[in-house]
Amino acid sequence: MTAAQTSIILAVKKAENGVDYSSRYGAICPWCGRRTMIYKTMPWYNNTRIRYHRCTHLKCILMTMSKTIKSVEIDQSQ
Image 1: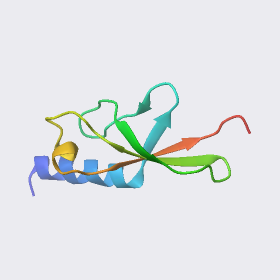
Image 2 (image 1 turned 120 degrees about the horizontal axis):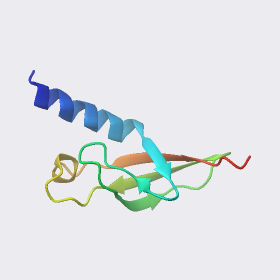
Image 3 (image 1 turned 135 degrees about the horizontal axis):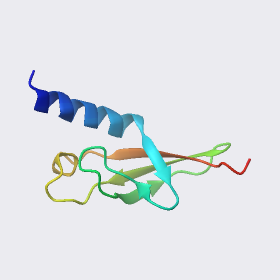
Image 4 (image 1 turned 30 degrees about the vertical axis):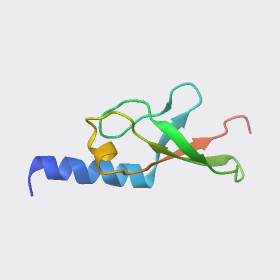
């Protein structure tokens, strides 16, 4: 397996497992590092909210693969 293949696999795993969500910056694509677009927001569960995103950067491998990116927001006020 090449280094490029390993990098792609790690980025896909990070997208599936979840990236941090910031109310200021949103969620960042684990492959290209750009902000992503929200396409689904789940309701709050205790102090956690999950969102699903898509990268819109045309040269991003995750966008090319139509891979969704999960983000997790934690409410710090509690």
